[in-house]
Image (tube, rainbow, N blue to C red; front, side, top):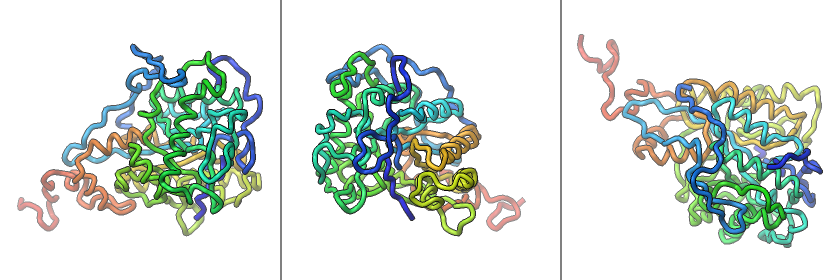
Length: 423
C-alpha cells in the first residue's frame, strides 16, 4: 500500500500570500504546506500570554507559562469504559493562500476538537537563507519542498501561535522532505536524524532573525520543551528516527502503519501509528491518510477526473467513519488520522475530513485530542489496564462488558448464564 507523502498567517493585516506556496516536487523554491461528547471541554477564546513572558534566544519564541486548554489526565476507575480518542493530525502544517490551517482551527473550535500540527522547519526559513539548512546526504540548501517567503513565514507564525494558545499541539515534520532510495530519510543514520531534528527546531527558534520580521509577536512556547513527537516524511526511516528521538526526550512517534488496536511503546516512545480502516468498495483496508486514498483513486495525479471528486471524497469520509464506529462500538482503540493542507482532487479530501470532525467529535464519550493530550492520558493509566486493553482485537468489545473487563474484581455474571449466582 502506498505510504509515500511527497509533498510537501499574518499577525498584522495583510493580503493573501504574495505567491501561493507551490507544490513539493524536487527543486521547487516555495513550499505547499502538506504532504503527506459526554465530556466536552469548554471552549474559550485563545488567551494572550499570561503573567510571565520570557523571551528565548532572539525572541522568536518565548516562555509564557503552561499551555492553555490542556485537560488534566485522569486514570480510569475500575470498570470504567475508556473514552474514544480520535487524533486529527496535519503533516507539513503551514498557512498559504488556501488558508487551510486557519480554516481547520475554526472547524476544531466549533467541534470541541484539539489537533496536532506537524510544522515543517523550512516553512520558517526564507529562500534567501536556504544555505543555513544542511540536510543529511544532500548539498546545503537542498529541499524537496522548497523554502518560504516573508509573507508565508508571517502567516504561518500567526497560525502556529494561535493554534498553541487554543490548546493544539505543534509537532514537527522535519525539513526537506527527502524520500526514496537516493539520500531519502529511510537511509539516514541515528546521528543524521539528530542533526535533522536539531535543525528543524533551530529554524522555528530563529525565524525572526532569518526572516527579518522582528516586530511580530513571538511563538508563545519553548520549542525545546514543547516538541515531543513527529511523523517522518513518506513514513520512511522510522526505526532510526525513533532511536534518535528517544535519546532526545521525545514521547511518541506517528510514522508507522498499524491496525486499530491499543498502542504500546517502542524504543521508549509511544507508537501512535496511523491505522488501516475499511475502504468502501474494496476488499482491502486503507491507511487513514488523505494521500493514500488519493493514490488508490487517481494514482499520482493530484487532480484526476473531476466527475469522480465527490465519490472519492465520500469514500474517504465513509472509510474513516467505518473505522471510527468499529472502535467506538468495539475495543475503543484511539483512532489516528493523518492529513495534509492540500486541495488534491478538487479539495475533496478536505471536505471528507471536515465531515468526519463534525460527525464524531461531539459524540458522547468521544475526545478529539492532540497526540500530546493522548500520551498524557496514556502515561496516567495503570500499565496493567493498558496491557489488558491491548488484548482486544480490532473492533472487539469485551464479551462481558467493560465493567467486568476492567474491574479490579470481575462483575457478577448475569443471571441465566454459566457461573451466575443462584436466585
